[in-house]
Image (tube, rainbow, N blue to C red; front, side):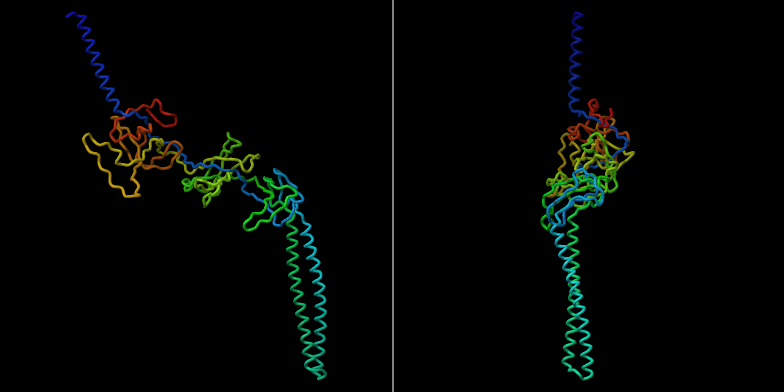
Length: 425
């Protein structure tokens, strides 16, 4: 055999062996799951609760009239600043003024009647004393003395009735003066006129049990401003008074405002901040702003996050790494072995699920480690028990985490890991 032929035959055999080896390795690699991983590290975790709402003044008054009448004078406009006691508007007072004068005239007449009744009572007392003496001296009869006593009692009763009518008239006069005074509306406190839905010439309607009265003005004290946030029912147990918050007002989108929780609603919101019926179960949480801008106005849209907990040195893993599954589904049956039958589940009974992560062993296989978790931050979750710092865990992708089983071999590929996932090669 020629040497050239031998060389060609040898090269061919090597190529065939290389193809066979490559095919074998490729076949084995198909059974290996590609995953991304992350190290268990210590970091600062901040747990937050988010919400949206509107800006409102802490002290706000919707001013309505307690008397009915036409508005004859409006002295303020929206945006005006008023001090406590400043004149706001005037309701037509002609009818109430006339009623007050009539009550004053009536009480003057009753005073005159009282003077007359007192004189009558004095005369009746003298007549009775005279008739009593005459009866004792046997000059007049007993009947005459009894008539004098009856006249005295009648005069005393008449004076007492006049006194009661005077008290009644005084009460009516006080009521008339009160109604007259309510035709002039003054500012109850210092603040900004944030709404003026009426104009001069319109009628002020008094509210009844079923019908609200006309809101004439709204005055807001903008020195203390609150954000009325709507928070989901699942987050409310973590919200506490005094917790800090970071707020973003749509009018200043590039600026964060500090706040503190001052009030937590005890009943769900039936209408959202936009005035529509609330479809989800939310609760009102009030957050008081620190150093609000001078140009802030009620009704501005606001969003924010309330800091519910903070761990400065927490053992943490990326949120996507956490697996919640049925414990029986985490093991793969051996070849030829029948799957272990799952216990019968009673109607309405929830499956018993475990919470944990897949830890990468030195030989490239994975084990499932149950963990106890703590607070949840934006991208990470605290691990209280079950892991040690520096251990390598599977963080993704999601499809691989769903298919992984205990003992599966994995191939780590962190070349396309998104920033902030905490993955490490």
